Image 1 (cartoon, rainbow over the protein chains, first blue to last red):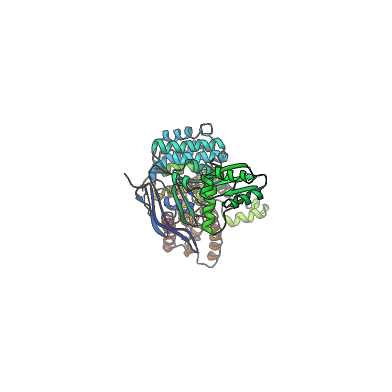
Image 2 (image 1 turned 60 degrees about the vertical axis):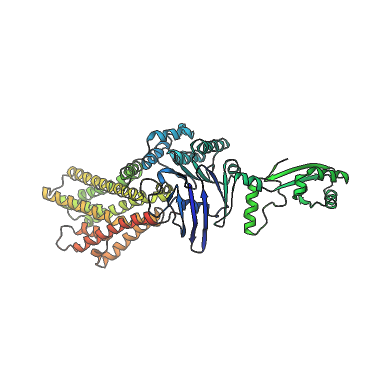
Length: 321
Length: 262
C-alpha cells in the first residue's frame, strides 16, 4: 500500500466570517513523524478535527489511510489513534475501566489495554479513578487511549502537555520507537518546539489557516538562519572597524551580529579585521536559530510584523561553532 | 449498527459507576412514601384536619384513602415527578459527554455513532423502567403496610397500567432532551428546557388545551385516567408518539451530521 497516511486537498473550513482553515493541501507519508506547528487559532485543531471526521469541511477533501473522510462514513478509525486537545477520560471510571471501555468500542482484546497501562507507566494507578489523576497521569492515560490498539496512524494534539521532564522523554522515546520499529505514522501538533525539533521527520507550519511552510528535517536544518555573533570590549569601535572592513554588523544585545555568508563562512577574517583595528573579539560564535526562532520569524513575517526578539535574538539560537 | 452490544456494555458501565442512578432512585422513592403518608392522613379525617396544611395538601392530592386513590397518586408521581427525573437521566446520559469533554472519544471509532446513540437510548429506557418498577414495588409495600382498603385484582391491574403507561408516555416526551443535550453541548439546555416545559404544561393545561401539548399529556392522562371526561384522546397519544419519534430521529441525525468543534 503506497497511499499517503494523510492527504488533504483544498481543505477549507469557514465559521461565518472566520476562515479557520484555508485551502489546506497536506500530505503526510506513511512512517513519518510530522510536526504540525502553528500559533493559537492558526487552524491546527480544526484541521485535526476535520481529519477525524469530527468537523465537516466547508470545501475540499481529506483522506486518511487511503479512505476518504466522509460525513457519517465508517472511515478507517480502527487503524487510527488520536488525542485531540486535552485528554478527557471518563472521570468516574478507573484507568483500567477507561481502557476497558475503549477496548470494547474498538473491538480490541483486554490484553492490549493491559499492555498500554504498563507501557505508559500507569500500572500503579490502574485502579484509580480518572478524576483523581494528576495532570501528567491524565496525559499518559490520554496517550494510552490513543495508542493501545496499535494504530497505523496516530494523531496527537500536544502530546507532551502537562508531562514532567521524565514523561516528556518517555513519550519522545515511545513515539520514536513506534515510528522506527513499527512504521507507525505520527501527526503531532505541539507548542514544545524543542520536542518537535527532536522528533519530527517533517514539519508543516500553519498560519491563519494556510500551510505557509512544509519541509523535511534536513531541509529545516539547511534553512535555519545562521549568523556570526561578535562581542568586544568596545562594541562601537568594533562596529566601526567591521564597517570599514566591508561587513554589515547589526546590534545584537551587548554585541554585534553578522549575517552575510562571507562572515558566517569565514569567521577568521572577521577576527583578523577586529584584531588589526585594535578591537580584538572577546567572543566570536556562529549560531544557528532553533525551530522556535525559525517558527517565530516565519509566522511574524507571514503576519507582516517583526519577529519577537528579532534584534536581541540570542535566545532561540544554538551555538553551531 | 456496528458495535451496538459493545456500546451497550460501555454505557451500562458508565451508569453503574456513577452515583446518579442511586440519586434518582432515592429521589423517586420519596413518591410512594409521601403517597403513603397522604393515605395515612386521609384514612382518618379528624387527624387530617388537625394536620393543618399537610392535611389540605393531602386532600387535594388524593381525596380518598384506598388502593385506587393510591394508584392514582403513583401514576401522577410517575408522570410529573417522572418527567423531572427522566429529564435528569437523559441530560446526564447525553449531556455529560459534552460537559466532561468525553464526546471526542466517541466520534472516530469502529463502533458507529448510531450504535452509541442506540445504546444510550436503551440505557435511558432501562433506567427509567427501573425507576418506575421501584415506585411500583415500593407503592405495593407501602399500601400493604397501611392495609389500604379497596384492593382487587382489577384495581391493581388498572393501577399498574396507569402507572406504566404514564411512565412510558413520559419517557417519550423526554427524548427531545437528548437532542438538546447535543445542540446545547451539555446538561444545561435539556434541564432548562425541562423546566420551561413544566411551566408551559401548567399554562397550556390551564387554557384547557393540555390534551394537545405533548408535555402536558402524560400528567393529564395520569390525572384523569379512568374518569369519563378524560380529555386525553387518541390524538393526544399520537402527539406524544410523534414527539418521541422526532426526539429520537433528531438525536440520531444530529450525532451523525453535526460538527463537533468542542
